[in-house]
Length: 174
Image (cartoon, rainbow, N blue to C red; front, side, top):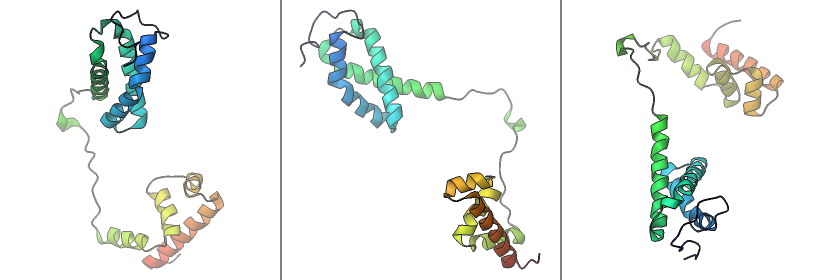
């Protein structure tokens, strides 16, 4: 064990405190590994470790048993993770459920919709993808070009051909 950690009298914490620096050095990787296991996200784990170390630094003078430091730090990580969920809870509304708008999206089961979906599925991928991105997802021609790695003119050509093929597949004139 590091001698800076085994001191019985704890100094007032400062960022330069050798005892605190030794804590970070000795347990930083374990804390990060544990925080990642709790959160499942590298960035969240880093935030949890930072919050933990800040709380530990502020409370270092209250730590009475140096042998329990690792468990103490892990408890802080666990509590910081729990705080993360407490902060993320939504607000309760006074609006009665009956007055909330219906967000249920219905699925069109008409014959026309079935025929249209099948015709779209039968389009070659290079035409279907830009058409779906434009019509269903509302992307602009430039946004589609950026997403698919094409030029805007190339997307325009594919959209034009997709509509032509769709009309032909549906038996429309024009």
